[in-house]
Length: 338
Image (tube, rainbow, N blue to C red; front, side, top):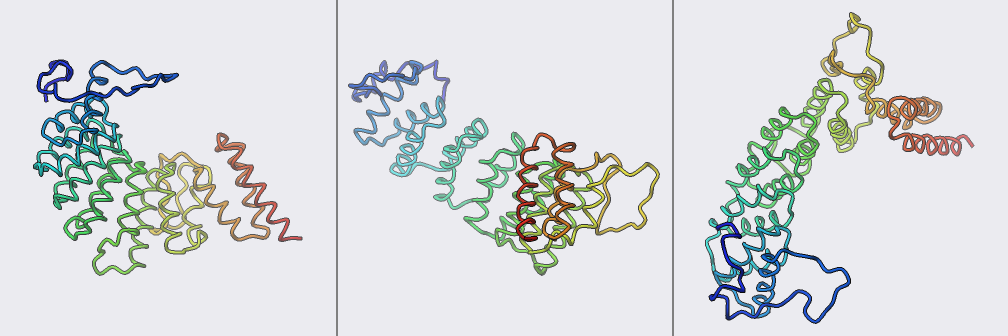
């Protein structure tokens, strides 16, 4: 479609002379009117006229594309465009090619992705979508709409061929950026929430694999909240007590050991922080505090000391939250002691 400035307004085109345009503020005087460009006001006036008459024709597709290019969030234009495509039985592959362009250009616009969902529901051909999504994620690796659309494709069609390389895909995304919270969320979806086929692995083996995967990434980048959240998610899903990982977490909650001090035992189940790690790690201190709080009794005092260290030294930006945790924990302990 040529650039909009190369075309005259719809009010100046003879082929649109049969349409009666409708002003947005017809018979009204708003206190705070929105000032649009002449091009946008003209196009939307004719769009309202088209909707009123119920016309669905090729020129309606041209009009709605014009509006969408000016305002990709115009949900009424998207909806009417889809209805027109269905009424005309238009080639949806052509529409998907247009969407390839618009989705990349407007990655954070919900309406773009919703329209694409409607199209793929009709074509029933989800295969090319995974490659398109992977390319889109190269533009913005953490875009919510792109990841959400990928999960929808996988879950809606639930096809073995679609799932077959998904764990490899998300692992490659994490190799590129271990701090990509969206990729960690997607991994949890793939492994635990989707019904993905895991071959002959039983659930316990899968949990062990995921715990090992998370621990290895923590060792590489301890101050990465995403992987700690993933670790907690795996433990909660499998109903494993946090205390079972105390031996692994403890070294991350302590200051950096003196240089040249070797570990007493090399434990492959509990990899130690890398030499470049900045310790202590806030997430590890919180994890240890949660272990002590859960244990109850005198251990609550240990939890309080850890929260105090976060509030006053290691994570002062969240001081009020840690003080809240201290107050709530002491309140519960006092009730139990009483």
